[in-house]
Length: 145
Length: 142
Figure 1 (tube, rainbow over the protein chains, first blue to last red):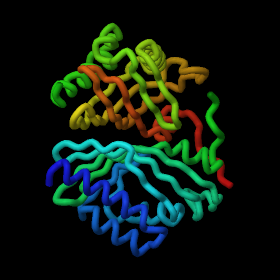
Figure 2 (cartoon, rainbow over the protein chains, first blue to last red):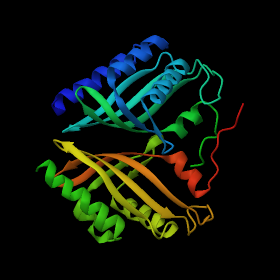
Figure 3 (cartoon, each protein chain N blue to C red):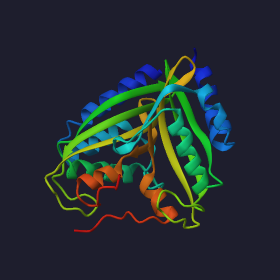
């Protein structure tokens, strides 16, 4: 697949992720469609998740934020790599990292760098403003300016 | 101006400016209206700000180093990923050094104009970094 096709794939995956609506079966189907069996998710903490663990993570996210809407602010691709700078807008309706639902509207910004082979992601380096998210959820105090 | 030429600029910024500390090269590689957007909406504007932040970082982490792990792009944009290392040996802002080492991953999208970087969006493994160098940030459990 070309870099252009890979970008289109990332666009479509983002759109379909926004349509899951907290449905666990849909989240599983989405992971099967877009993740290769050998998929590795390089997480924010520095640790790696395999495909099954990554699926659990997606399920946890869509359960905590069922109305999550993902927009790509920038897409850049070359060869088998695509980077997406994204903004996720959502309402915190389920438990997240031990924080019970707050009903708060949150905005999460981040950047995903993917390697795509044959129409599926084989590797994803995801970095996001998790401190900003935790601050919006009231779990950590706002930083001093 | 090609993507390959832009990659040379990024390699020089990493190797010559950040790793070797040659801040005199900054005006050659970054545009005068350079702006870096960081998580949370923080912005770093202008070449003097870049040199100031670099100085503060190198004072706090004297062995600070970065390596390029991914570098690709199209048109006037490049994406790159860095692995950064350092040891917290000098005061940073009002935080006393802990003597602990860190390694983090940073992802950046850069936009070029006339062979210079004019805009960057940056994300890093921030919680992991704070934990490694020993700065408390843990969420309050409710």
